[in-house]
Length: 77
Image 1 (cartoon, one colour):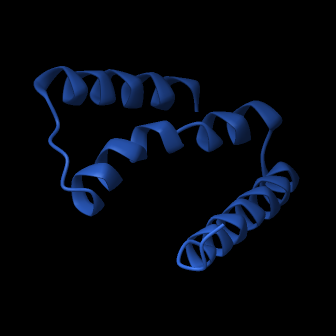
Image 2 (tube, rainbow, N blue to C red):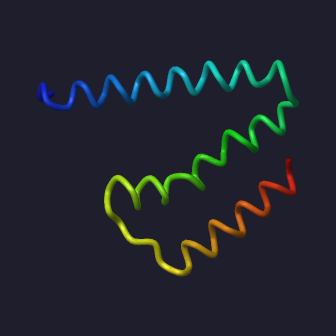
């Protein structure tokens, strides 16, 4: 493993750790179903992070899918 990817791997590990911590804390404040619905919205955020950080483009189909998914998430919560 090259030394240049170690900081990225450490950051990824910390983000996963805090994600788990905050998910378990959320179980104390709301129901399991709502917590999981909110947790799985991370897939809605990925295209925007890819747009900003990786300079990828969003197609019309991507935006429509994100909007439909977000509406579905709001119906669950």
